[in-house]
Length: 180
Image 1: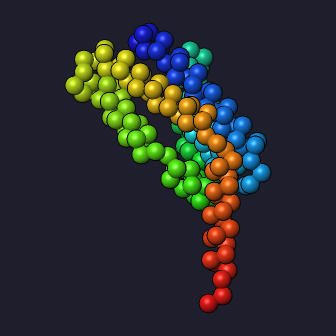
Image 2: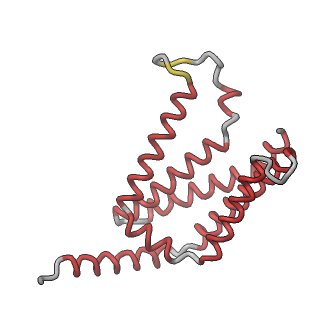
Image 3: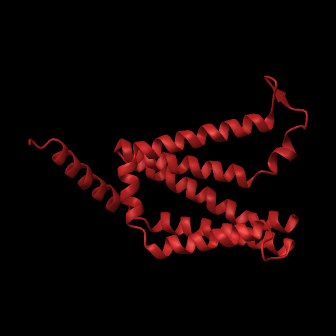
């Protein structure tokens, strides 16, 4: 398990950089729906970081911790659930921008991430791999997925998506207000 913790460090660093990049896009945007999309992305990265650092409560929170008759883990799961719901709501609010970002992604990137996700799942559950090697494979695949996200976020031309979103919004406005 110590080897897996060491392997997780690069992935966690990449996730933190992705989170910071999303926050940069939140501050860079002046359109509410675009800000909502990037804030949702930042919240998702925050949730993933917390899940990746699942061993921290064992180090810092006493086993008998209780607040308002609920354990630390209840509070943690409730908070992460609420953050996930907020993220989903923000993504629904910004669905037009979400679609403009997703449609411009190369299909090979989707395929690569899907393959890595399947291998990661197989490694995590020791399907076709020995348990020790599966754990290492899981972490390597996760880090590769996080690396792909970072490269994508870093290479993303924010203005192109904002312009295409503004064009789509203007086109939607014109068609929805057109007299019949």
